[in-house]
Image 1 (cartoon, rainbow, N blue to C red):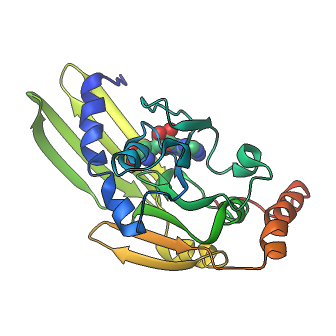
Image 2 (tube, protein in one colour; image 1 turned 30 degrees about the vertical axis):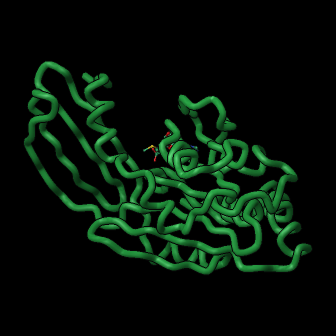
Length: 235
Ligand SMILES: C[S@@+](CC[C@H](N)C(=O)[O-])C[C@H]1O[C@@H](n2cnc3c(N)ncnc32)[C@H](O)[C@@H]1O
């Protein structure tokens, strides 16, 4: 039985606390144009508003945007297909922030080329990444309900299961990114600074100031290569 209840929703929300920490690491200031990539329920976007942002400076993109603040512009799209979402609107954002979602994305060359082209000179892509999966089994009580939580991995496939008697279970799965491989790939597009913590890290990826001709041609050239089957998106 698979069951997603409000209780699992609040349990999950425990992992989404402190939406401001990535903004702090990114050096966010009101006035910056922000793309909240995989923004979901808009925690990061709303934190920008709380810090004084003009809503027109904030755009949230998600496969399933669920932001309750309707002043924020939302785009329903795949974060790895930004060419379709933004077309010729390049050089748009000072900050592309992707919180608690990088593990779900492939970060292939084509998508990276679009991300860097959407950033202004010296603009930053900032995301956090789960870097060290391990096996663990825990029992705990949340909102009066007993839970079993099991995490593990097989190769690069990570799973996280929560189960409660009488409620069912909820499983999250994703593919763990090898940080060295990811850094190699992203290094073609960005200057990268990585702040490591115990099991996660924050990546601050700055788009170098390149010539306008170079940065405008790149994603379109990648589109053509992709259409010709000459580049593929990650694994
Ligand atoms: C854990 S939530 C994080 C939401 C938000 N960034 C936050 O910090 O509260 C992950 C989000 O990633 C979105 N997502 C996953 N894969 C995506 C993709 N390929 N393109 C766009 N959004 C995606 C999901 O819809 C979900 O809203």
